Amino acid sequence: MSSFLSSPASSHPLASYGWDTDWQAAFVPYAEQGLLPGRVIRVDRGLCDVVTADGVVRADTEFVVPRDPMKVVCTGDWVAVDPVGGDPRYVRTLLPRRTSFVRSTSSKRSEGQILAANVDHAVIAVSLAAELDLGRIERFLALAWESGAQPVLVLTKADLVPDAVTTAYLLADAEAAAPGVQVLAVSAEQGEGVDVLAAIVGGGTSVLLGQSGAGKSTLANSLLGADVMTVNAVRDVDGKGRHTTTTRNLLVLPGGGVLIDTPGLRGVGLFDAEAGVGQVFAEIEELAEGCRFSDCAHEAEPGCAVGAALADGRLSHRRFDSYRKLLRENRRLAARTDARLRDEMRRVWKARGAQGRAALEAKRGGWPV
Ligand code: GDP
Ligand code: ZN
Image (cartoon, rainbow, N blue to C red; front, side, top):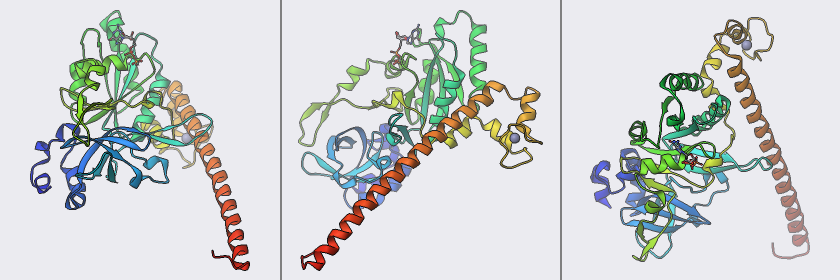
């Protein structure tokens, strides 16, 4: 235990999984209790696989089940588990997350679901084989910013673009939709740009986002330098010292860094991402600060700086429309969540009222309460 505390984080057996001095500092009280630090590489039905200095252990999350679905243990979490014990062991605590990816579970039930934790880079894959859909790029960017991770925009299948001039134009279009974001063209097929991406994701934890067919699996395989399934099938030591084969949703990349690929992350939608939307359209929010009215809707108000920028072409109509569309969509989702929460509260209070009356009646009747 004390060796974890005295040895530098970089030589810690979990360093390749992202363990650093800050995690080490956060873990001190748990290390003092003799608990083992580990990172969750997979979760399924109340159990999770945790990679520790002693190998992968299976752990039950029973003691850390929260009421808030956003606080459920998920892939990428750093946790404290029992140093020894049965199979499964128990997760004793969850270290506070640096970032978290959340999605709305469906269009009908607007409830957040946590998909991945402690992600540093959100790699958004967009195919150059089809026309660039800047609105879709902006939507993924909003999601990425909202999570707290730094987005990286990867234009995939660059080998399908006929010439370098066209590629340069496409890059410029994408860059205009992604202020503050590194944009690169990659061809996994020809290996072009993969090294640049590998260097970016080399420090920290990444996820791959993007539409189906965008080239995410192909990119993952290039980064892994092997077929994911082969890498997935590494043999782990379970709590009883047996070797087992597990699927991992979190993989260490040979060039450094960690890749998380959980089911669900791929079809992620907007959820409570108003701050993220603001970040994607930073230049619009900046312009809005110059509007005469602080609550300017940028429609036809006098002294509207956004309107002025639209009129003289500094701001494109496409981008302004996309901004409004994403904000509207996000607010609709938020309103639905509020309505659902109200309904739930009503049910809870109704049930409590009934319980209270029953208890009162039981008391009057002399029944033990
Ligand atoms: P995913 O659904 O996002 O995981 O996409 P895939 O990785 O499965 O890729 C979808 C299709 O695009 C597959 O047929 C790949 O072979 C193809 N593809 C992926 N990367 C490249 C590339 O760099 N160049 C070309 N020409 N095709 C690619
Ligand atoms: Zn305005």
